[in-house]
Length: 252
Ligand code: ZN
Ligand code: FE
Image (tube, rainbow, N blue to C red; front, side):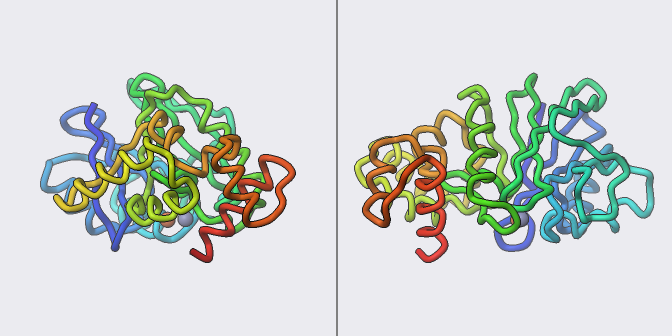
């Protein structure tokens, strides 16, 4: 199975999942033109759209992509976005041709945010919840909610490929190094990412194993991260550690 990033705006990726030679699903098509161009160039028909959350850079292309055909638009039941044709919630399972797609509710960045996990591909589409080296800003939910959402993603197999919606990795890693300077896995990831960006290549997908080793926002229980949070302000528990480093990143 082929999963290809379509670049949009300055740093979004619209992931295109090929079901076969002729049909594909796209995730979070914020920009219709880049998707239409990709489909036309590869002679592919749009079979469906998965929506992780309502932000315009993830939904802005849906109307244009669907007004000529009846494409399934699947997204969270509590979405403020009005263009869905099928809604899902935590624990929903979708069958898309031969694909079995599991839905996880991951509120925090927004309250409607969901992630899509495809066990047979070991693929996770997590929108703006988990990034490589970072995580989404907490806009609508609480820090505790966001940490719990990340904790549920962290439970997936370490071999899971993680398809994030933005190319934020290099900037995230700058911050990660400030929080976790002695982490040799992080240092290795920084070197790898800088090589990829020099070649103008995506740093995604990443893997859950990589993120568990190097992403401070999945490491609220690691002594080095707890220590760095503690030097900012007194922390009592995992939610505090997460909140302190997330707020630190917001002003970094
Ligand atoms: Zn967003
Ligand atoms: Fe976004």
